[in-house]
Length: 314
Image 1: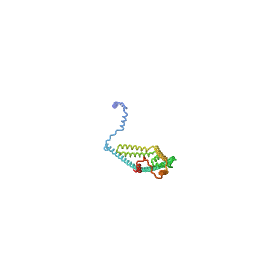
Image 2: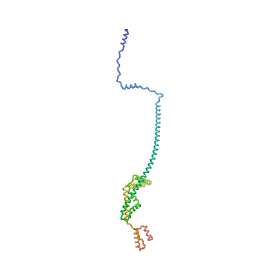
Image 3: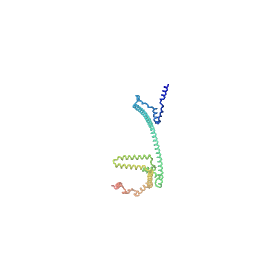
Image 4: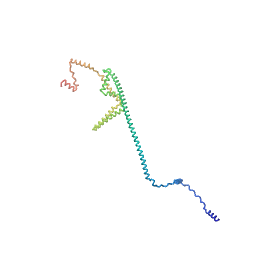
């Protein structure tokens, strides 16, 4: 028993004393590293998948992608072709509708043009009738005024009217001058038509001149045509006031001729014939006498030859 107690004491005495506590880990580690380590523990890397016979290779995937793209492209192309066909059908339908509409519009336009032409013709006829009435009234007024100025002269009551009408028949320019007193200028459409007519006339003349072989003569002819065209243009598009003044002067010139004719002494042909008969009877004693010898200096060569042949026989 004593030996067991001693052994126990020895075993107790042989037990090593407790070691000092280990120092705590340093807290100076980087927080970012800790976060990364924690992420790696939470998401361990997956093992690499070994390619097997059932998994398509990269070339196969590329071929599948190409096939899919081809199919998609064909589908899109078919869709585009369908849309194109529909658009063409719609276009043809619209063109047909437009054609029918154009036909109807052309018919309406033609009818409107005919209506406008009829209206313009009616307006022109009405204006011409009104102008004729005005011109006739002005002429009768002028004739009455001029006839009053001839009072006391040996003329009939319608001398002025008769003379002016006869003068107008002999001189067409007088009738044109009378109408020219009402000229107010050309409207834009009439002026454009006249300008076109003058231009075409000049072009026709120049085309004929171009056929001249001689260069010098051709240049002279071209200058002459240009001068004549300029002159024609100026005479055609004269200022209305100036043209009316020129026409009025021409009419006044005809009136001057009428005054000269009215102031000319009148001869009574019956009285003159009786006087000549009495004078011839007195000079010849009732016998016919030879006519007096003419003034040979006033005879022409033909008349002189005739006179000498009839009276002298040579």
